[in-house]
Length: 333
Ligand code: NDP
View (cartoon, rainbow, N blue to C red):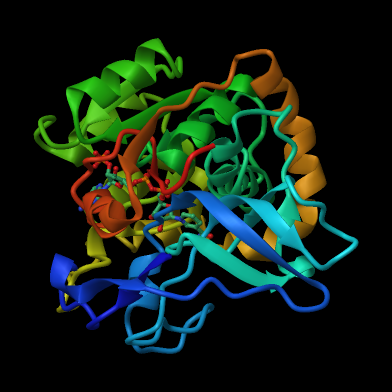
């Protein structure tokens, strides 16, 4: 079977040559273990951080070893009474066609809730990130004003729609007219800003918020953060989820020039890591379940076929080539 290994630590924007497609033995499960055939795998922006050799909230990937990441597969052999053959599972051994490990490392997914790949997106980690950031970090209240960057992406699209479901005024930014049209017409937000063509982003954001921003959901960083701080209202909150603009930087870039406004407006900017909120998964499903079942929650997916294309899918995240959740289909359903 095939797996993708890290061949070299990327410097700046990762290159194809930083990855290697290798063949690996399919390991038979031992007692208490299962063998899973992977069907879908996720590529996520945070994986860029794990490619660097540095201490962080997750350990770095190792050169010559397979990468890891979210995947959905089906149990094909089981030596555990906890997981039956045929069960669809969510787990962290992506970037390979087969995964063998202790049953406890694989979480069953309920295919009646939605398509199985949605457990890597709207119904999974990115959806949970959106929910936790809005309600547990930024303490969003009904009817507030919300600005979201990378708004059409896996996390951003859920942020937008959860905020709309709570009666908020929502403005999102995205990198193409197609994404902006989708945000306004399908996701139903109040206004979308194409940050590539809008000219001065600070002005565009200020114009979109005549009464100011209560909550900023930060996915991008840089000029987006500066524009948001400028338009935030007194006592505004920002959930700092990610700053994708700088993940491939080789030099520190200048920060926002207007941080002093945080003082005068008594703003609260708080970073967060979704895994610290997994204990609230039940609450998340209680909120998302009805939105999904009623068809109100919309999302887009961009799919690359074949495990060899996983590095390409990953690189495309940093080019905005994905529309919605970026997935790799690595095996038949
Ligand atoms: P997305 O589906 O949003 O894909 C990434 C998108 O980011 C691209 O499609 C692109 O959209 C945008 N982007 C890429 N490069 C730039 C750039 N230089 N400037 C502006 N926009 C850019 O990915 P996710 O939804 O998975 O992740 C969104 C954010 O959430 C990331 O910052 C990620 O690190 C963070 N995250 C944080 C978690 C946490 O626990 N804190 C958990 C999960 C995600 P466009 O075309 O609009 O530019």
